[in-house]
Length: 111
Image (cartoon, rainbow, N blue to C red):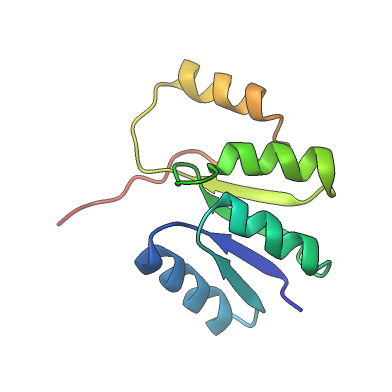
């Protein structure tokens, strides 16, 4: 039974986040997109936190969040994305997704 679901279409990012969380004592399961994430949530009621990318194939993170809220249960979310959005755009996404927990964009350095 997992405590945290990590959803990202990038296997590199997904594996890095999963490994970090596992090293810090959490039980983690990974999913390759929003559709896969929903399937895993339906079968594992122990999941309490979803860490998700926004832009993914098959089902994006915001759509997955909306479906979880309407079909399953109320979970905590951490949403991250690697594109630049202004504050008005980010506020519109937050309102549209009806997320209760939303963290701002993570700025990544490509060095």
